[in-house]
Image 1 (cartoon, rainbow, N blue to C red):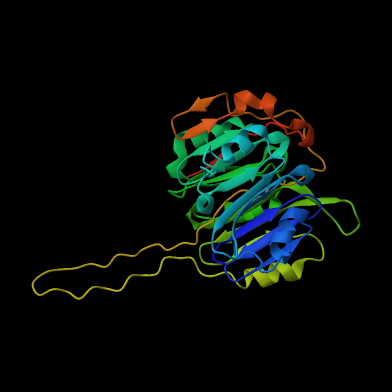
Image 2: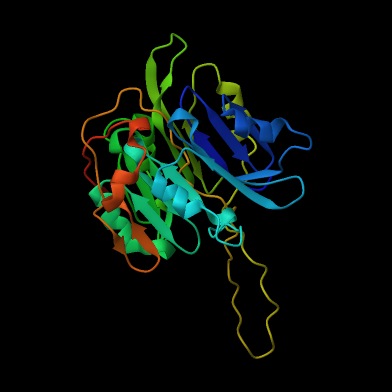
Length: 316
C-alpha cells in the first residue's frame, strides 16, 4: 500500500487506508470481497460510499494492474466513470477523487478534469475560480457542509456546526496548506445505544499528525492507523557541491503521497437531513470543469437525503 484514503458510509461503515495497513468496517459486500479474496488487493486509491450500498472504488489488484468498480451512483457520475468504446475507463484511476454529498450531489476530479453536480453555489464558484489544476481536494458532508482546499493553501469551508471538533482544528491553522487529506462523512454515525450521533471525519496533516472521529468502540482502528501515518513534509534536497568561482543553492522538493481527497470519499447516509438543496448552476464548462447541476433530473434522488442551503466561509 502507498496511499492515504479514508471513506465513511452508512451504518458506521468505513475504510481507513494508510501506506502500511488498513482497517475496515461494515463495507458493501462487493468491496469487502476485494480484501478477503486470495490474493487480496494491494492498495486503494479512492473509495466513496453512498446510500443504498452505492460506491466507487479504484484500486491496485494483486496482479499490479489498476481497476475500478462502481454501483448505484448518480447517472451523470456513472457516465463520467464509464468505459469508452474500446473498453477502457477515461478517468485517471490513481489521481481520481470522488466525494458524494446528500441528494445526489458530488464532485469528481482527476489530474485532467473536474465535474460536479448539486453542490452549494459558493463551492461551485470556488471550483470555477480555482479550476482543476488549482483544486487539491473537496470534501462534502452532511446538510450541504463542505471543505475545499486549493493548491496554493487557500480554501473555503462551511461546516454549519456539524463538525465542531474539525472546525476548531481548521480555525487554528495558518493556512490550508497544512492539510494533506480530509474526509467528511455525509452520514450521522450510530452510537452504541443505536441513536444517531455526530458525523465522522478524518483530517491528516502533512507532518503525519491526524485527528478524527470514529464510531463508538472503534478507537483501536483509529489508533493503529494514525500511528502508521508517515511524515509528508518536504525533505530538504542535498546541497550540490559548490563549483569554484560560482555560487550554488539547494532546492527543496515536495514528495507527497498520492490519493488525497479524495472526498469520498466519503459519502455517507444522513440520518437527519435538512430541507431544500444547494446547486452550483447549470451546465457550466470551461473545457476541463463541468457542472452538471442543470441535469439533476437524471439523478437517483430517491436514494439520497435532502440538503439545506449553505454559505461560504473563505480562508485566505
